[in-house]
Amino acid sequence: MQQIKIFKGVDTEITELERQINRWMRKSGARVLSVTGNLSPQSGGGGGPLNSFAAGDVMVILHYEIDAPTG
Image 1 (cartoon, rainbow, N blue to C red):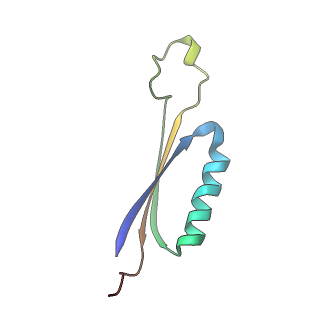
Image 2 (image 1 turned 180 degrees about the vertical axis):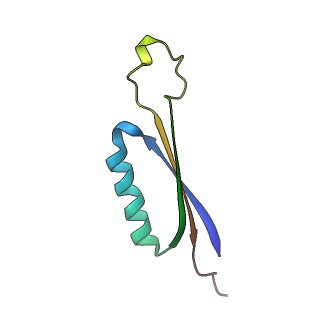
């Protein structure tokens, strides 16, 4: 059965996001079919000079397959 899993974080904490995704993949036993990601400017910001060095949002989408439940 194919499913998706969405992870969200910020680019200043990308290493922790990677750990979270890798941990989930190990524990779930899912067969990952594809990984897609997106980086966007800080959410909710006005884009002014005070936000020029703010963290951006990171979204990672995993398309995976698991065995269908029996029963």
